[in-house]
Image 1 (cartoon, rainbow, N blue to C red):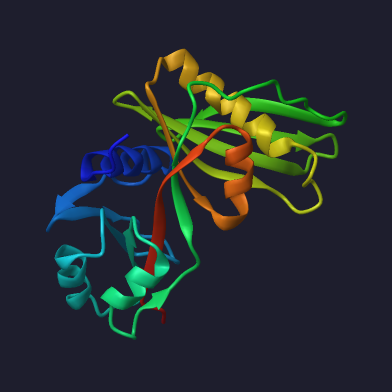
Image 2 (cartoon, rainbow, N blue to C red):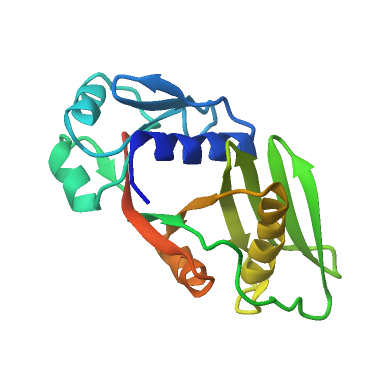
Length: 210
């Protein structure tokens, strides 16, 4: 699988659909999404930390605008002035044709899948009514983008993340997708690798803080 701007656009489009955000636009050699949340005004996404990213960064002076690129944090750090904060590493990953095995839902938990924004959301709820785990998937142009896979404190190490991924993957399989993509944190990477996902590229984030 080749890493290029078209692939990143497929991931970013799916992410935007899953979260109900505006779709990405092509801008100065990269992609831009207007987020408009309290924590993030906008994000600019690039294949690398080359001239296009540097030129974009030079025009940004307001806080809470993010730069993303498929490079390791050290390369992102070297490309930007010191005023930029570099966050922890992430990983752009692609998935297998289907999630292997069958994850077992523990007793006292229930799982449901519904439609939200431009995608589907899976929720695992404890019998107490507490949300235990959740995740999203959006299907677009032959790609399934998995996003916001979260297991809450107090419900971890029970395999609930695998349950969520299995139910989201069923959505992707039904849609006949040919590509599965996500961006993982350091903590989430191990789960996805156990499920057969492979790292396509490192992923770095830079932001101007308040």
